[in-house]
Image 1 (cartoon, rainbow, N blue to C red):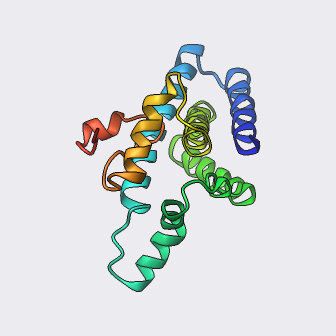
Image 2 (cartoon, one colour; image 1 turned 120 degrees about the vertical axis):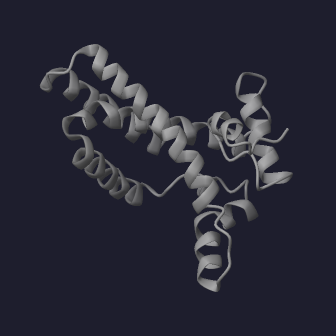
Length: 174
């Protein structure tokens, strides 16, 4: 809960800042927030498919792939490997916010909270999938999708918080 609390708290602060210290309308702030959620969903898919499942064609690539994600596939029930360590996560917060601010200026105050809420959703779903038995609610399908990725075909079902991009890029498998 610590990382999720950090991201939701900073998202709330940034949205408050966007509402009170920018000239943006509420509608524009909502649209930027939604764009941040959407971009995160694509980012999650691309990162998982193309970085975390990097083809280990050299010893260096094999070490990178194993460090970033291979160890998670080897020990999928290890609850300590389901989220980035908080210190590194804070550094990445500043890197991403800085990057978004350089690209979009003060729009980042409304966009980045959507990105962070998307990341919080990803962390929540990923933890639920790996730490608990199959739920009997709407998380069950996400649980099944990610289980297919871990236990049936690691070259499919890269979307953890949503299968949307798996459908778009035809990497979804039942």
